[in-house]
Amino acid sequence: MFVAFLIINLAIGIGYDACDVRKSKKDCGYPGISSLECMTTQCFMAGGGQLEKKTVHVTRKQGTKFGFVSGSSRESRYIFIQDLKEGALADHNARVGPEEQILPRDTILTVGGFSGQSMRKELGDVVKKNVTFEIARTKLPASLRWLARPVELGPSLAERLITSRGGKKWLDTFSRLGGLGFSMWYMSGYPITSLPLYYFGTAGFMSWWVSRCCHNSEVSEGTPHCYVGGTANFSVAMKRIQKRADTAMTAFKKDPRTYAMAYLWSPEFTYEKWLQ
Image (cartoon, one colour):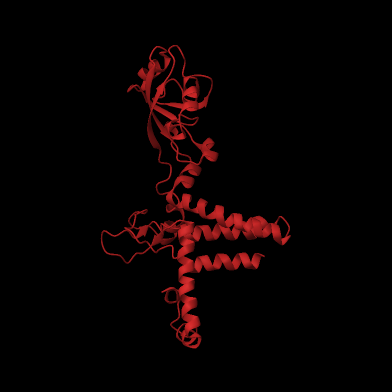
């Protein structure tokens, strides 16, 4: 089973060109960045840790407190919501969809247009029925929101990695390849020790291979030499690989000898030529 899983991953690695950027290239480096740093740390940090700002209108009954546990000090300019309890925010969340909710690990930036100590006074007012919140929200998946920190502390390294362009693509790819690997390991009957090293290890490396940034030092001025790799998601990438494989197979069936002589036995044979 592992050999079959390895072949699948090799086919993906050969068939999907991570540097095939069909739209404008997005710079993710800086002048003088090395190829190694571009493809590893820089690619999986660029764009990470950015917060999503939202404006939420909350309607409550007069005299009802908002009901949340603050995770910020009184001297802090903003208020980090540690948890929610019974109150106006919980009632509001029960009435609206996910996009209009105020959630634990959100940071309150302003209330009714006020910030700082004036915002705290607004939160203590139980008379106003309609109150507008401006909040900042992490882009972490719901299952990992517990990693979010107050705005003043800045994003953690884990949050930057997970929410970066490369990190999000790595997670998407690994969830699929890792899931396939787990299924094939389960059917193989191999011991549990083979799962993290062979199956998850292979899936993790291949996920990096298709998610990495690309480096090209020989570019014209104004063109990014460290740029975000292929933008296609996993399903689109698989369709491209299948299309290339079908094209190659059609050419081989049409004239196997010519195809083999021209490509497989030629000293000029390259994977790039096979993929054309």
